[in-house]
Image 1 (cartoon, one colour):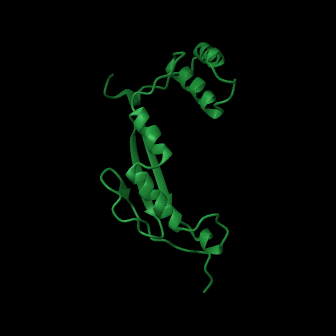
Image 2 (cartoon, helix red, strand yellow; image 1 turned 45 degrees about the vertical axis):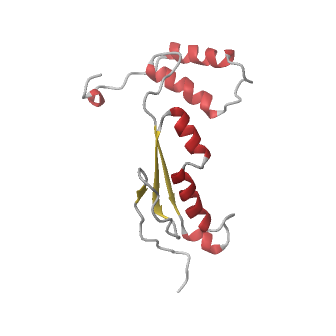
Image 3 (cartoon, helix red, strand yellow; image 1 turned 90 degrees about the vertical axis):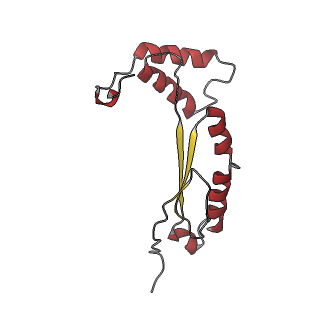
Length: 140
């Protein structure tokens, strides 16, 4: 692959490959449409790649998390401490997305953009970009 591939004009989606990918989806052992949007994305990716069986060679998943002032108004289903615990769970590999990332051989980043409760060190490979929290919902 050449180094400046991003300078090339994008290839037009191949309608024949999309049709072949759609047909392939119909041949798989599963109820048609049972994978929902994932099936549509697979067909679209096949058309973009010009092949009936799309491939992804390098997957990078990023999870961004933060709290907002709405939870302070008692309208959220969970308290803000849940955000912190989820950040810790993502960073330690305990969430479902972690299993999927591992299965895909994907790079997984967890980015703390400002949980109300500081989760502390999220371990190597995870990022803290804590923003200043502004709670517009509070009245003076």
